[in-house]
Length: 236
Image: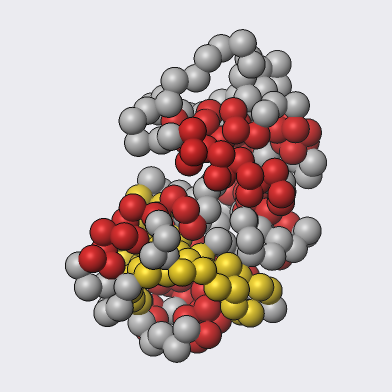
């Protein structure tokens, strides 16, 4: 981990924190919610050892990157604009693009809007879903999964943040990162996103308390609003 270098670059009107390591063909990693550049640490080290330049930013609203307060500043055009500006700042013409969760959504839009900057795409967790021209995404999600569906629950500004504040941040991170239920993630208000603090959480072998503490420290500094604004901008 000590070999990974960190810098802050001004891109598309915001300061972006970027981690990178290695020399060679560039690979750009895009994280999801509630994650950070740190989610890619193992892949970055592995690919750099194979002759690639691994690059992973904290996306807009996350970690040590600026977090504009308005959800209107988190549309696909904003995020793709950040990444195009980032590539320009790094003097990179084209990259291999790897996305997970929201990073995968952003990657799809990146490929649609600026295919000239992408060598190849690897996406995980989220498949490409063309928009229904007859109704907005949130309306479709409510119709399919109900008001308790987590994306629907994230829509009201400040509401999810209050729920997260009632629970230890580390516990919230654990609940999101290790949840593996196959069905839609529905969370009634009576249950809350952190669940009962009396129910112990056993970490899997791939996630350590040190890892959780890294995430928790960053989210304690910035809060969750930046990440939640991606969901709140879906209809935009």
